[in-house]
Length: 595
Image (cartoon, rainbow, N blue to C red; front, side, top):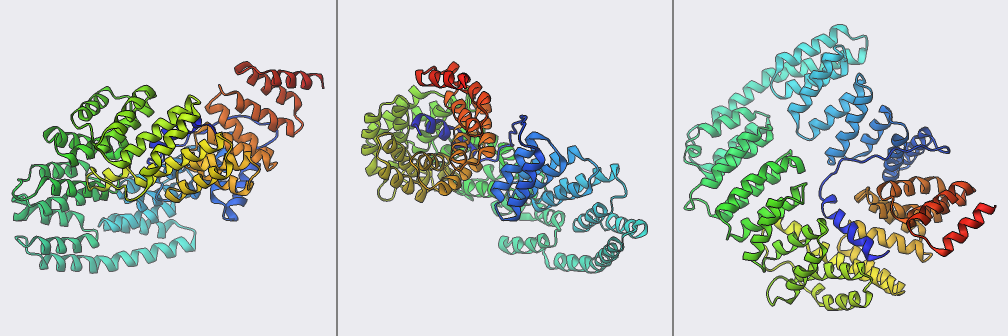
């Protein structure tokens, strides 16, 4: 696979593999395949433990004919930790069948498991307005009410189920739940009261105070815990440990405004009590512990980081934290304000390795390849700076050289960069902060180097060396879609292990599902394995994502031709010819037309 393709996969993958994107579903018609067939095959694959394949097949089924049962099944295949994707499919199921109790309960369970208790409760409350006698939903809501101390509401629901249900199981569950709630009603106040009686509201030993508050948190007494901390003298003295604990508790109950206000209080704590580095450590810990800590919710922290940076522009830790997280979390990479700010910061601190990596990635994401080349050369020429930042710069130059088919130049750059892969690269000039180090990952940058090296060897016909380089890349990072895709493509192209090729292509698609190159690779592997039905589906997806590439239409034509569909195959050869005319294809079109 050409490095010109790889460059764009890396650009796409820079943000795609760190954040969960909403699925983009292709919709198209088919004469030879029905949604039901795809769904049935998907269910069978799931039963056999092939969850990834089942997921893709069922997504294709949904693309043909959207149905609630298909959306729900897809949602069931997604791990709970992948909240955005799982909730997306469960919500799709509910949209298509609003009164289905099982779908509603699945989403409720997901929200609860993700510590989004208020949303879970609101969800079932709204559902019960539409379907007031949904017994399982009432029982689930009763349990949630009990967990937050709304015992009257909980008992009212269990009593209703017990009185109206025709199901002995539901009535028995309601009785059991009522008994448990009543027992807790007797025990919980006593336990809570006991803990409260052990807490001195004026406790000045901060560690003892936090320990006691944690005991309240264990029984979900968040409000009482917050009240204890708010009224404690240590809080009034702006004790940083208490403020940190308050911010974490507010995040636990989804009270974002109060959590943010506590972070601002931390920022304003005097340096005699808390160094700037300690402040940042506490703030990043609060962000990391945020139970709603996904891309959209993380954006709420950017203004705080910007305020910190504006007030401390020369502090390396704050500078690197602000720019690395802003670049990671923003969705608009063409933001003039951010890009101007980034370039100005890099002018002031030209050897900052984090800013160098962030700026190069921004150039690539925005398609500014000449600017990327200029900066990469400056980073390499500098006598200062981190080795890893220089290796990243070489990676950029290799990709650009290969894009221009300057393979000798690319090979020379690979050789020059090789010494930078040796030894401990992590990392001089980079702040000791997990969020910062995530953007300048040694494994990812070194893996990209070996990936480029492997692809270059294949361009030069050195297949053995190419696979060896890919293996080294995967030793460093098994989740780079560009490496997995290229490995699969070259295995297919050189007559290698097609099962292994399929495994890697599947993994690449899971990481970057909307890459036309990866969909094309998987279609090619499936074609060679004579799985023409699935091959046709994935090449269509590639064409939908990029309809200006002649090779995709050629691939589609060959897949159709293998199924005896000569007219449809010739139609696609003609489309390829319109994009990129060749003498060989013109002759092939003529031959097919005469048959």
